[in-house]
Length: 177
Image (cartoon, rainbow, N blue to C red; front, side, top):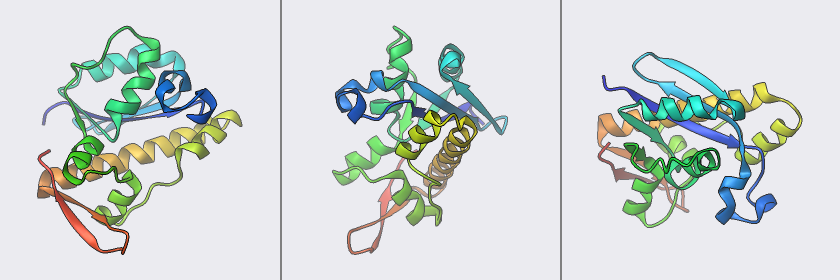
């Protein structure tokens, strides 16, 4: 198996608190979690561990995530001059957007494809971070990484993932992961 890393980040601030989505770097890292498929190991990172996180991502043959190109990498760019643009990455959201013309939520894709849902949302994670409940943020982020990996694996094995339209009809989207 290639050295594949799946990852997700949670932030300290919301987009509205930093002046909108054009200021993602100002949202600051609260927690990141990686999953190393080759070793079947999850690793947690906090703001002081960003250099180790970037090193882990750089050491992968492939990085897998959901909205990582537009969001997660941009959060990390606040801590490095490395553009991160040359890391071989599968951004499932970008692929689905190209196929569908709109951006489905990971939760919706996971529910239709796997029958699983996320455990919370990013706004709840920010609230937990502020309350000092770092363990809950890590648990939430880890679950997102697990769901992301499962959706990726399903798509890779079957050549499609699923989503539901506004009328709750299920559709398949071809993917080449």
